[in-house]
Length: 242
Image 1 (cartoon, rainbow, N blue to C red):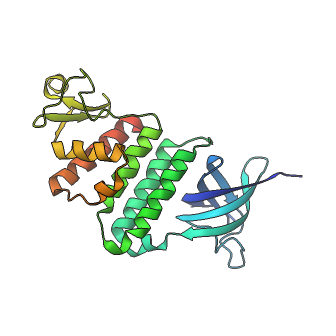
Image 2 (cartoon, one colour; image 1 turned 45 degrees about the horizontal axis):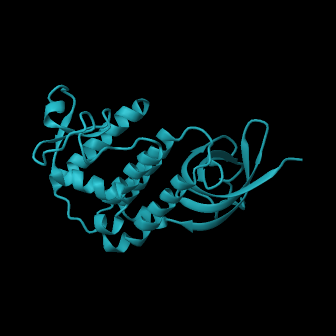
Image 3 (tube, rainbow, N blue to C red; image 1 turned 30 degrees about the vertical axis):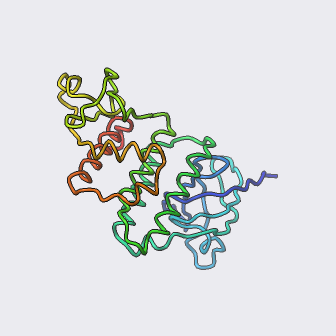
């Protein structure tokens, strides 16, 4: 007799398989990332259809088959359907899914990452009607996620020489661990210049000061710089997914 496992999980990826089956990638509270086969879920008569789908947070039950986990039951806790009403929010949610899929490969319990993930989607849901800058919320998720994976950024002193940072000459390098002073940056062509606004934002994010971050008005040039350093981090830490 197969053992049944029960946990709470968030769907961040799904793929179709033959015979109306779909494979759901969950990030769960008790097991971390798992893949489960939901047999015949694409059929109208499937009892699972209403309680598990992309961007659903559900209580799930599964068994471990010979080769795959089989989803046997699900009870929807919350579906973040507001994401489909706003193209920018939908893109940001997919960015989060991309980050999870890129960095999390094996099954390993990680409650802090689970809590951060659910917190992100709760925040984007609560802020939906207020039309806030959800790109900032994505950055809040990403840099704290990266920290939980062991990639702790230096955002106070130079990551290379440990010297003080001149606010008018600040550079960033994910490879070298964070912000870099002008002297150290001059030795490496690939290190890009940023501004003091970005450093302030990163410090607040890593201090988990979301209420302060959420009220910031970020200039367009700084928003572009945030995107660039995110891409730099993805390239350095997960180059196969660039």
